[in-house]
Image 1 (cartoon, rainbow, N blue to C red):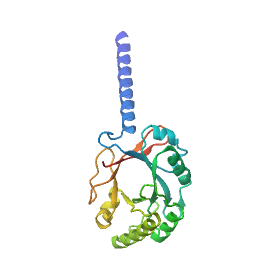
Image 2 (cartoon, one colour; image 1 turned 90 degrees about the vertical axis):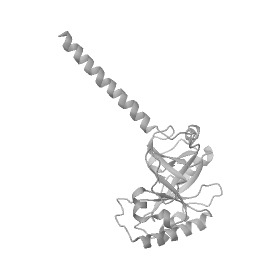
Image 3 (cartoon, rainbow, N blue to C red; image 1 turned 180 degrees about the vertical axis):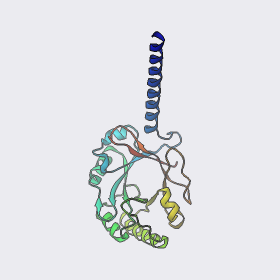
Image 4 (cartoon, one colour; image 1 turned 135 degrees about the horizontal axis):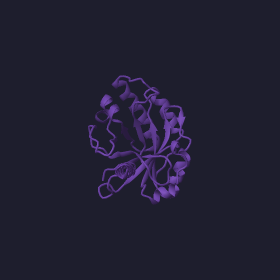
Length: 228
């Protein structure tokens, strides 16, 4: 009987140790960010899904900059864009607007939405334009058409803001359309925990952890670093 109780206790202790180890590992994963020694400038992507952000707390805990989603396609304005931009500015966090490009919408319509949403700012970072395949748009137009439309979109928003945009490229989108070799802009790549190398040119920004948990925001955020 005693040996049976000992085995139960031992097995329970092993299970508890495994659970605690898994919890510690999980916390390390969700909290991971590249070394500040290698990448001194680090920041986040923010949109309405993150709710009301505590910008002073974010600034205090190491958020150097934020890309704030402004528009999506040709119809959707992020309802938290203006508030997030004001909050970042007041907290001393550098900020830039982000547009999510939609292959199923005309470039000129997307540019109109962006231009009427994002005010020109001398202190804002260059606009980021996110390119990726989505469930809401299953279309994959011909590459020549996509390149032409993207060029139209960029020329209009860049004329409005006076700065060249950064192309945020998902791996599958870049593999299919090879934007980085056709459009001369800085690129922003993504690869969880590992350095990305799928573009035709070196990246200037890297999404290193797509779901990092940090103080100041209730939901996980994309954690981004800048190449020194």
